[in-house]
Length: 427
Image 1 (tube, one colour):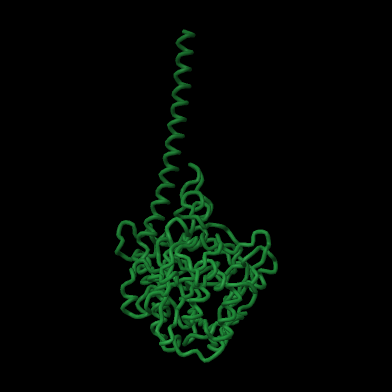
Image 2 (cartoon, one colour):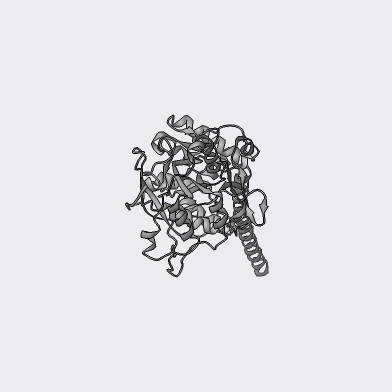
């Protein structure tokens, strides 16, 4: 009898152990499945970029009638987001006005809706955490950034932008989450506009997608670079943002240069000297066309703007062989990112001198520049025919919008230079 009892108890223990390991395996399978689905959705987000951007643009234009597409593109803006015509970058006043970052619990809850499981009982806390663990691109670092706290474009002669503090992953946690949400909602019916109830995060921002008081907005600066010949014709350049290299806009053609409005080092002085749109653009030129490492200043080392290529770019502004225009700001509909739109017009000789050693590839992707002649890049013709040959479904919203606006304002942008550009200081 005792032997039978012990055998029964042993069998019960084996059964419990078997159930535990079965439960554990089932939990591990559920975690693996959740993580794989997250990665698959991110891949679909990249592959369906063009169609998703069009769907998002349609949704927001219908929800907010004041929003309109820029030309035939998916890039959105409204009259309160831009001056009537391009203004010199020097006309834009940039000021420091830090305020407490807005916190929206409903937005935070909605942003976690599609996060995968970190363990069998707990999802990842933030989109950036899941992305870093499961789909980390090469360039992915939570660096200090400048948050847009105010924008006044009502005075064409003196638009004003104000900025405060933030971190780069604040952008990832919002922008990538809202794009992911739309990709998931349209998975089964890619060509159909989804019901707003299926995209709760986007629905919270439908009435005012800019919503500086309701969400954290970290703007980028997208610059269309034009090389102007003595005959008044122009060419342009793009950057193909390679998949696996960048955190946003993977597999798309974007303007070159483009980058976040960020301090270039951890030095306290950087928050003062780098809150400057022109310096942001200059640093991106150095990185994206000349191949310099990204300006980080981890040890507190500040950028020396008195050295080339910065000194050469500043000199070109002073003598008028470079002119930089600001066209306003706009919304990328898929991820609701805010982009400040600028156009830099170089006289060909100046461009060829400064960028004589332009790279073919940088840390973010491939420089699209047309044919090279003895190392010199000349660009793609700025005309409707040339632009029409570009893969529109792979053009980023800022690139497409800037090209349409450049054609619209071509006479102004390509006018014979009349003297100093006067666009050095945007503060």
